[in-house]
Length: 302
Image (cartoon, rainbow, N blue to C red; front, side, top):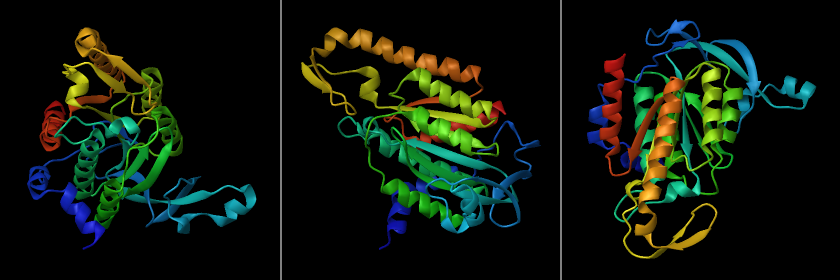
């Protein structure tokens, strides 16, 4: 049995697929002078005429490296070609150590984010848009360039299945790197718990908007991280730094909840000011329910 089939069965349950079959995820903003949804935007693929160069990123096909340019500059550049397509989307999935947390009998935030990423990838490829995947912790872990062919979905699913949480978080590094390398406006989808420096995260998100990309943020937390329901004295350990603290949960619960709510409110406010969709989720909410609810709301708001 192939890894491809295993990954497909894991992430694309028939019931979930049936819910997404008639859904759409269309960019709302003007992209490269055309309104996306009219199937007319000058994005890059590898099938028509040469358009321009861009710097090589890990995961790009080696066959598209321009060796003449390498000979002159000693740097790797990719030759990009122009084709007509709806959209190029990039899913940015946080794979840092904190994403591995989960309360008993629940999936981890990374698993939840992977299911969400798989459904979004399916949806985009179904509507013939190109989608890529970038995973990050304190730097870019993996980059799979956007493609729109059906077989590309299996490449993404296998990558998600092999993903493991690791290292500390520094989302802004990945955000700034990708913002500088993407030459054509597109759709950026970020999936993270944002246990990071909020100012730096927001600077990275604003960098995408400065480059005229449309941005959607899925902020995923475990239910216990939001409610802090712990009753007994316990040692709490930071999954990224290893730092430990012994405390009586009921003595800090009120202040903790206030800080979590303040963080979510801040992200919501700042994202709204930047015309970024912000969707807070907990892993107790079925991901397919959360996604279809968001897509329906997005359609209603136009």
